[in-house]
Image (cartoon, rainbow, N blue to C red; front, side, top):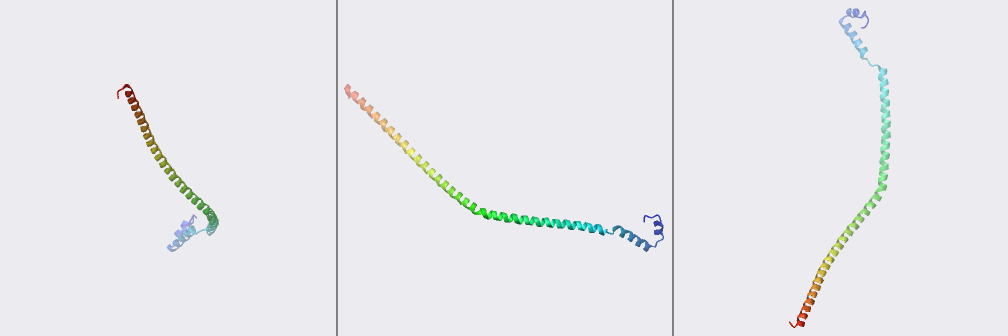
Length: 148
C-alpha cells in the first residue's frame, strides 16, 4: 500500500476485495522467514548438542571422582580403624595412669599425715622428757639444799 496509486485501487475495490487485500498484506507482514528460522534452529541444535556433550563429560568426570573417592575410602578405612583403636588403647592407658597417679597422691597424703602425727607425738614426748629431766634436776637441787 505504499504506491501512490494504491489508495485509488483500494477505493475502487469491493468490501470482500478490500478484506482479501488486507489479509494478504497482514500475511506478508507476519509470514515467517523460513530461512532465518531454519538458521536459528540450527544454532539451537548445535548449542543443545554442545551442552549434551559437556553434560556427558561432566557425568564421566563425576563418575571417575566417585570411583576414585571410593577407592581412597576403601584404602584408608582399615588404616583409620587401626588408628582409632590405637587411640582408644592409648586413652585407656592414660585413664589407668591417671587412676594410678591419684592412688599415689592419696598414699602420699596419708603418709604425710601419719608422719605429721608421729612428729607431733615425738615432739611432745621429747618436750615431756625435757620437762621431766628439768623437774628431776630441780628436785635434785632442792634435795641438795636440804629442802626436799
